[in-house]
Image (tube, rainbow, N blue to C red; front, side, top):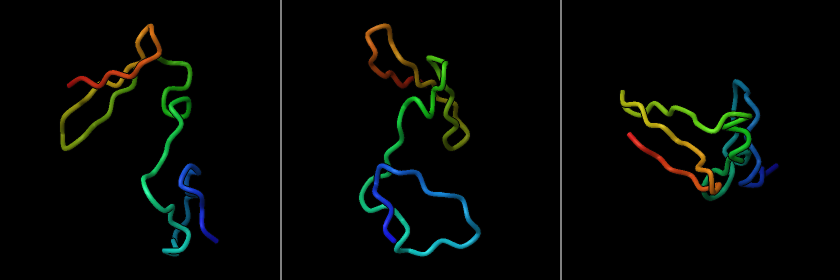
Length: 62
């Protein structure tokens, strides 16, 4: 069964290649931010801030 690219994958110990989403993974920003307007993303040992501006746009800073 193919999972649409906008649906998160369920966690399991065994993943079949046909269950992987096709194309780019898609995450809803509400899932990431919850009730906050800023999150920290760790990438290769560096921290990045992703925040929602007062205009509803996203800004990523190091």
